[in-house]
Image (cartoon, rainbow, N blue to C red; front, side, top):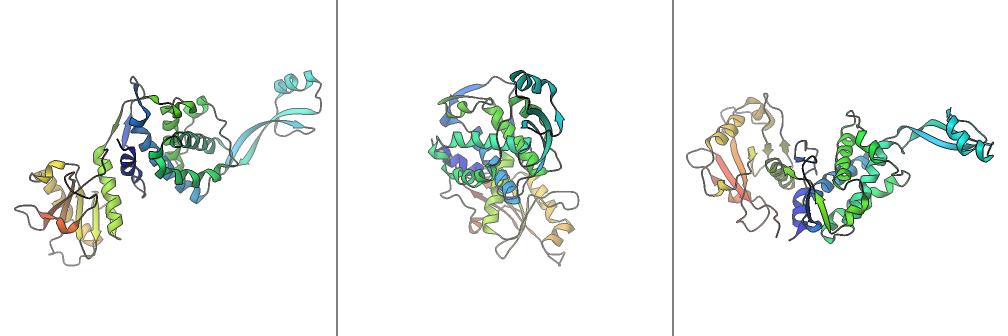
Length: 333
């Protein structure tokens, strides 16, 4: 079984600024299932998303914020004096020159960055024991130096109860994934190195995963690819404008389209997009009498390579300028 092939599929999911909300659901309230570490397909999904977002965050610069500090100060007072701690740890031991104080400090060592560093440590611990995760090690090596001045001393209750500020979208998403990673391993880093692990039941929206993977492949092939643009109250999957193809593309995770007709509902959906005036404007087509090409991309595991070959498109029977193309997804061997 080749986990790296599965990881290759997942690791592209947020290579671009796309919405991954609702991509998967983890049912922590259900009974956990014992599996071999090598059969863990949930972790690669979480790791790939977390590391990609983390890389984006560190490239922009880690956010600074105010955070509370408790410190036993020598011959000075700062902020609020903690009377109980000062008596217990200083006065009763004859250390009259010291005072326990609580004060606010502005910097990087706040709870959000601590949670991110702790999750990064869990990811690094797991990946270090698996050669099949080598493709993610570069992101870990890249991100680690940015957290050198940040500690990961944050307890489980703080992590569980902390809610990220939704104003910072990338931080919010990274914190959410960090909490899932930590919870997935029971907040115990030693669980990342076990041969047999317990995993919660989880569900992956494969239609959404497929759509995002198609986006990845289209971006590799075309310069002008609009993903889910808002047009006349609707969101077509893709609008592409190039010398090889100009039109509306829809991703359908329906392998049966290799041998069967396209469902009439899907034909109507994509055709309706292609008739909207906003689509003509997006594609810079001035002649409104022009029939815009429509294309449905589906998965086909019988093909030889993992690429979208536009030269092998097939016309959908009984429809003008309506096509379909299959391509092979990475698969576990």
